[in-house]
Image 1 (cartoon, rainbow, N blue to C red):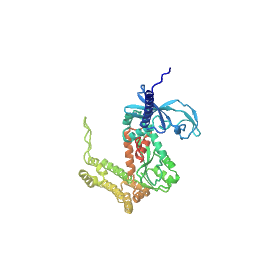
Image 2 (image 1 turned 120 degrees about the horizontal axis):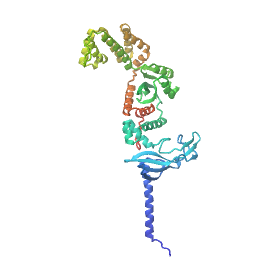
Image 3 (image 1 turned 90 degrees about the vertical axis):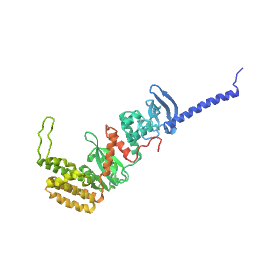
Image 4 (image 1 turned 135 degrees about the vertical axis):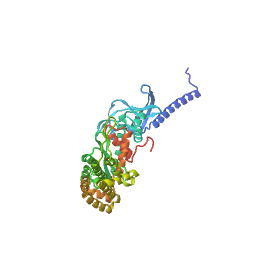
Length: 447
C-alpha cells in the first residue's frame, strides 16, 4: 500500500520550495544591483572567512561572452586560461566584496590568445569599473593617502587606476578638436628637474594636453597627436619666451601668431633692476659691526637702506605701503642711477598697461630710453626685447597672456601636493586631465 500526501500538505510543500527559489533569484538580483553588474548573471553569494570578504560568483551573459578583452570582438574559445579569478568591488558596509568568475582565453583574429573580456571590469585590471570610478573621483577631490586608507588599496594602485580611467576618457573624447588659441608652458612635478608640458585652450579654459619633458622634441609629441591639418588651424599661441617653444611653434604651427607673456617680460625688467640694486648696495658707504661670539655682523648705513628697499623696488606703485613709499623717495634723492632703473621698470609695465598702438609707441620710446640709459643690465634688456619684439607686439595687439596657464599650473601643483607626489609622469598627467580637462570622473551609479 502506497501512502500519498494529502492535497493541502502537498501544495504547502510546493509553495515553500517555490518561495525558496524565488528568494534565491531575488537575492541574486539584489547583489547584481548592489555591485553595479550589467550584462552579468549572478550565480551565488558566499562568505570567505579566510579573506574576510563577500564573494559574488558571476558569469557574463550570452551577449557579453567570448569577446576579446582588447577590442571586444567576438572570437572562438582558446582554453580555460588560469581558471577562476577575483576582482575587487566596492565594499558592502565595512566588508570587502570580490567578484569571482572564470577567466578563459579566446583566439582573437587581431590580438591572438587573449583573456576574454568581462563586462564588470577593464582588461588586465584587478578592480571593477565602479571601484575604479570611485577611486578616481576620490583622487581628484582628496589626498591620495586618504583614498588609499578609505578603499584599502596600495599607494601605487591609485596611480594605475586613474591612468586607466583617463585612458577610457581619452578613447571616447577628442580633446584636441577645434583648437584655435592655445597657451603652452612647463611645470615641475618632481625634484630632479622632472617637468611636464601643459597645453591649455584659451577659448574654453580647459587643459587639453600634458606630456613629460621640457624640450622641442617633447612639444613635438603634442603636434604629432594634433596633426598637420589641425595644427594649421591654430591662430594664436601664448608662451613665455623659451626658445624651444618658439622653434616648435614656428615649425609645426605656421599660421599661429606667437604672443609673449607680459608677466615674463616685466620679470626680465625686475631682474635687470635687481642687478642694479645689488650694484648700488656694493657701492654704498656702509660700515660693518665686527663679529663677536654670539653676535653676527650686520650691514648698516646706506647699504642697509638699499637692502631693505628690495620689495619696494619690485612692487607695483599702487601696492606700496607708507614705509615703502618713503624708501623709494629716499632712493630718488640718494641714488639717481638706481632710481632711473626703477623708472625704466615701471615704463615697461606701462607699455603692457595701455596696449594697442599706444603701447607700441610707448615701447619704441622705452627702447630708446633703455639704450641710452648707460645702465648695462637695461641695455642688455633692450637687446633682448628687440629680439622678441614681434611676439611682444603681438601681445599688445591681441592681449593674449599666460594668466590662464599659470592658474592651471597652480592647480596642478595643488593636486601633486595633496597626493604627496608621484613616482612617474603618467599618474600626475592622468590626474590633471581628469580634474582640469572638463570631463571629471563621476561617482559610480550617477550621471
